[in-house]
Length: 467
Image (cartoon, rainbow, N blue to C red; front, side):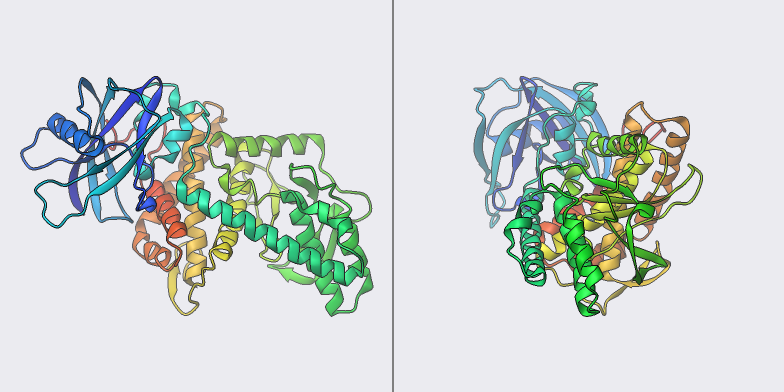
């Protein structure tokens, strides 16, 4: 791995940070001014030169912020030694401005176009900056890393989520159309029920059991599909939570010895107040860690399988035929349940993202799975690597907050170490699988999450990466 020395500049104006994107190459992500230190060039001189070349403005008084090593894999086989500086903007303040770097003295190199803007410093911005460039931003203000500022959305993520919403809406409309034909009635009665994630999840459940009933000419199943729709008023955005024992079970189709579970037997099923409170706090943990992008449109129904103790092995899964429904054991820890919900919702998000982007992955190309300990198609590797990259970030961010019990801290640190070790060991094959994703926006999102997982430090433990 090649060592490259870099400088980065945090330019601040009235609590906001100067950031930029490449309008002609948005996959690069949101960044701060900076670049490579030339041979025999002093670090501060490099900072001033790079800032002028990229912004067209001179860099006046600056101060040293810190240094950091950042592994650039899977983007490049390079280790960046970064030196961070901070400065205060002394020029006329403009909300947005553009500039281009001409690369003087480099024949044949096209100008680079930059689009600059100011963003409020906080956890939302730290998370949005690409390839770890926001890692030392908290040093400008010790509390900024924990302040939940409005999320700064990555352009490629905004684009994918827009496609997913359309994809989910079209899928719900098709379910609704087919159910209306099957029920031999107009669609107006149930059309109002597909405006939220819980209502779409219930619609998918109704569609699945109705199709099974139609194939087997089972009117009981078709009647039950109608009842499922009655459990949603179409307005609530809170996930519907219920125990498996309170649900109707279709034992004709099984998944790893666990029957399909359909909401709705008798009155609307629900969980007790203490369970609901725990799961509400679990979702709050996900939001607290700025990880709710993959949850908002993927968490509609939570079916609780069994109660488990903190030290017991637990089970959770999703089914591709029931988008929006998560099946999981219940553990009396909001932090742990947050991990489970994030894990399964991320699987659902990625399923929808692949569908929305019309990505077709080859079935004949196999990769070794360190999680299953066998060769699997690219789809399985992409799903596992992306989900665990997100889970590692959740664990690391949760450790920053002083809200975890001692046993939760121990669990998070142990899990963080072991899963990060697995990803680093198999990074080459994971990266090869990711590059089979034909949509560049989705591929860039996956690669960025992988890069973040590789570079995570373990809060509360000594690290040689930052100093």
